[in-house]
Length: 129
Length: 192
Image 1 (cartoon, rainbow over the protein chains, first blue to last red):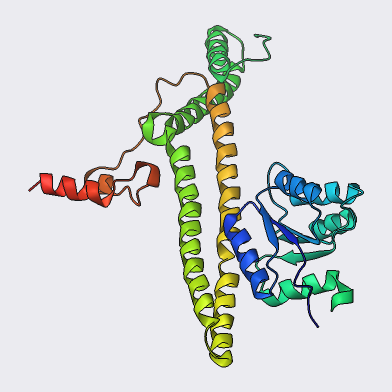
Image 2: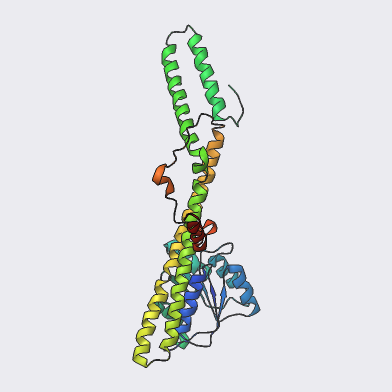
């Protein structure tokens, strides 16, 4: 069972530390084609220029939250098919429900471990597992 | 009774005291009970104004919120810096691990992965501290609004300031106002 190592991933978080953690954990999964954004707007621009294969985004960001970004992605004909994983400290039921209703592909609660990240990425690409 | 919707508490307090004075001058029976109740209210307002004034008055209290906010933001900055240094080291270990035999490399890589996972504490604590900072800012705004409603408080008691050795306890220093080791060395040398 392996992930597509060539996939292009956009990671979004307003904490540069978390971006670095995600990038390092993805590198350990041999996924090196990673682009970073510090907020939802920057991420959306990145995606419009070059649609990625996967988005991994934090929720709690300003001014455009991860949920806003998710909704924009799902409303964009060019981007709406892209798997979108929310990685967030927001763990209430209503958060998960809202994300699901907005079309999130999977949901990771911080703090998380490398195995969880790998499993969730694999789950949104079932054909490659 | 003044009809202004923007009636301030000092106005109301002054009005209440005038009413008390006028009631005392009346020769009405049973007035003493009403006067006692109104005097109680008047005393209570004066005490509350004094306590609010203590929060408002003096440099120590006026800067309390901004200083506390600065301290909390400094925690976020410091933990981010420390976390990045830890990850610098972990990335070095990861590079070295790549040159080792499989068993050793795997052991090191597992340890490095643990370090990356644990480093997420900075994100979590940062978010919690940011929430506290926002709550403090909101509290500060509400307190400012409250003290404004109470009007000028010339009779407010001065805040208590630490004295003696207690006045020397102001650390840890904030980065934006921090003295460098060079500054300290120079100062130390100048005192010899």
